[in-house]
Length: 314
Image 1 (spheres, helix red, strand yellow):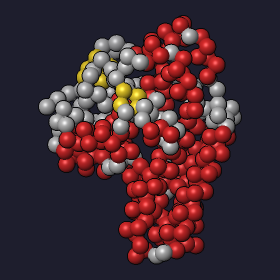
Image 2 (spheres, rainbow, N blue to C red; image 1 turned 90 degrees about the vertical axis):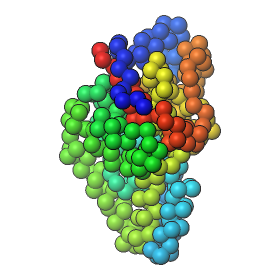
Image 3 (cartoon, rainbow, N blue to C red; image 1 turned 45 degrees about the vertical axis):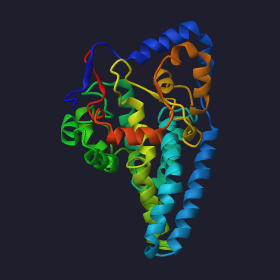
Image 4 (tube, one colour; image 1 turned 60 degrees about the vertical axis):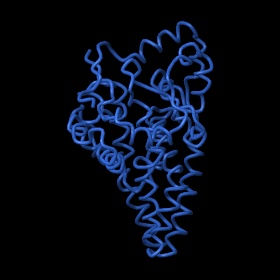
């Protein structure tokens, strides 16, 4: 069983590949920009989640099982897409205005019930600037997490189930983020008011539905394999992987992860074009084609541990 991270010399390979791509294909710069239609998609998804939550709320708490079933089978895809919106708004690829991008962050976070958009914004930018450095990347698991989970399948299942909150345990390793800024407080108040209104007017079961969508969209669900596919690896020579499967259609192309780390200024809808413009840089990389298969592999393949990550020593 692996007992330490893959500790590799050198710096982030994405920067070097981005320079090489721009040298070979300067037309890639035409993909930089913003996609305001992301805001319209956000409003549509938030409206749909609100309607479902309100209806389930009217059924009463005795139908909690139906709320969880609908969440696992349908709602998780909606909330996961909203996480991708939050991700793009973090990189300011929705609007040119920083103010409007932050409005999108707050609105997209409403159905998550547990407010995290502004905190995510700060720590995700650390993930890019300090990627694969243990003292700079909050996406890397804690050493104690990896030692505790080991390669035991049921411990990995519990780890995935608790994943939404385990991420909080990593923030002490990286530069601090202001979680009580004006925008962060607006984020908290908006989520509380949204959930409270649904509870008060339609019933608690609507909030149960939304919470289940939040919990399973980032944890113990095949969609949770997204977090495994991005940077967990059995090959230390490739510390980021892309996913080119059908769920990209409802996950706003978040699977194009090598492409995104190479060029964070390219909005989600243009990432396939980026890959098509520079195929010689991407076609030779290992990829994932099924999050469901990876979900099963991660749980039951003893080679997968939380140490299956590259840590850069430079």
